[in-house]
Image 1: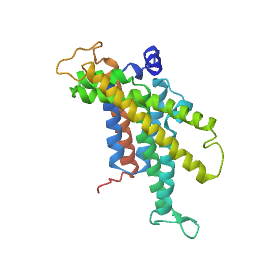
Image 2: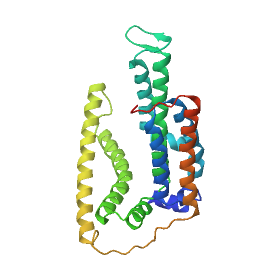
Image 3: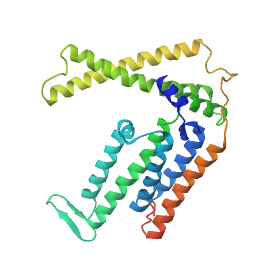
Image 4: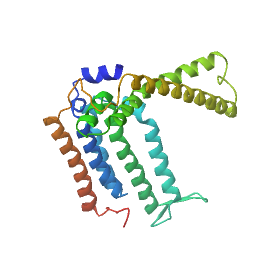
Length: 264
């Protein structure tokens, strides 16, 4: 609820766009990035995506808070690709069991930048999209089944509750002296126990929510909507923005001679 109020009260441009238009823009960018592993196209796309974050009312701090697992995964993936890929060109670093050459460094850099460029649009989409608006667009414009749409809405609404539930379970366990101290193995065991507790709570919440929604007639054959999902001029500019970023990334890679098809 807090997220919805924030988004509706925000004057951010992307927050007012239709969720399907934002999804289309993300798919255009992702499609180009999925076709090549070069660092030029990924760099251009990444710069274009970072320029869009102020339009969604996001800051670097919020970006890190909401996407740090994906950012770390991209960094680690690029590093592991650089040290595990076959050497080509001049060897830049030789540590015995692994080495980094010019070719492997370019490959790792391209993998890392591509991971970031694919993850950021997803973070951007979820940060400036109200789950209810997304459900309305999926049902009214995409004509998806009501049960699927309402299940998606319930899942998105429960994500924030699960994060709060995780903190609550952690504080309750620390109050009982569980997981507050000890070595790495003891802390890992405590983490597994806390994860199991969260899983139990998630199943209970999902069961209660499913029964409640079924009892209130959700997913019926005929349904009315409190808000109509519409397209506007903003949505056209959002799609064109995604097309521009994708086209610029493709043109830059082809012009630099670094375009490298994955399936070639």
